[in-house]
Length: 395
Length: 143
Image (tube, rainbow over all chains, first blue to last red; front, side, top):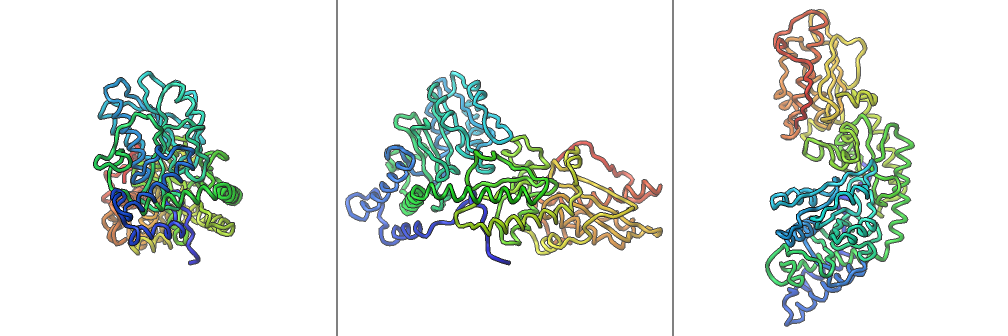
């Protein structure tokens, strides 16, 4: 086997050396509890947290006081939805608008909130994964308290018209939450220009450590606290801060901000090379997601007449790590809810493979991936009883 | 996740492909559920399965289950082959993860379906297939 090629960077990323270096000091040298303000060790930890907070705030064009650290993107999503819902209980506001292609951290939280009488409207998406602004406007009710739309989709990479949605939310006096876990570092985020009130982030998607995330909460937003306890994070998110993780998150964002233009430009070139390579070398494929309004590192195709898990196993044998929207890999009966929402039939959705790139990937790696995929698809198609669309759509 | 036997059969599937003028063909599963298995049988006048081929659309364990099932019935009489159970397939594979048990069930059904097709075409009865229903109209995905 040749070298390992990690093409699953939407799942998680390799932590940067500079990030590890920065973090390591906070284990055995600067290990003070940031709440211990009466001695230097504690104050140093507090300073480190505030430095990271400032880095995040600057990156989003927010104020430092509007940034809170959490345990990750999932906690941030939970906090945004439950916090706003609970702050509005018994106030005549019981309606949330979101989309059919959100992460399960949003979808399952909305499901849970039904217990409290909260209703959710799930917006449709078109074949590219974009929501319909008219449907959004029509879904707004006097009881609507929150619109929650992900900035960019984790599976198909589609980027939503966030600013336009933000304007509509603002016009109607409705809070706007954005799950930016996949978008952070790859798409320009400006919480003021885009009229965002709440924004979820995660460190490990941008080459920071796992177990740390963040949330932007616009000043004056009515939202309940989610984790109760001590007075950390200005009393809004209790629990001793994971100082080293926060430091790592801050460093990862600092580098993401510094390298932003170069990163987006380079990944877009690699992404397009992979998309073109697959389209030109493998017949009967469908590009999932939008051709241009997509994350610079996301390539998601369905390979008709074959199944995703088989492709992943054969890719793994060649040292390539990727992911699939097939039911076989999700542990559920249905293929990815995102692919089905874009109108893809089940059979085709089972054959989807997502490659998500990083800046560690070269053009040679891309060409190797295309060649490998070509061989794998030929091998599996030779074994498949499905030979054409007619077979695929039987039943 | 998978046993070494499963991975071996997935990597080097035995008897993969199609067959010209088969004596029996059976197909089970559907694209909606993500698994389809098709079995081709060549059966001689002594009712011995001389050759088997399979085509499978599905996950690694679906391909491995079909592959090992073809090995298990090749050279057997149709009366022996009809007794192939999904449990025997699982055992031969050195186990399957719980969510993949249905792959072994599909393999058993694909063999039965091909034998049924052979019996129908040749006006024969195979003990064990009296109550076999080749087509289940309702799509019901199982994992």
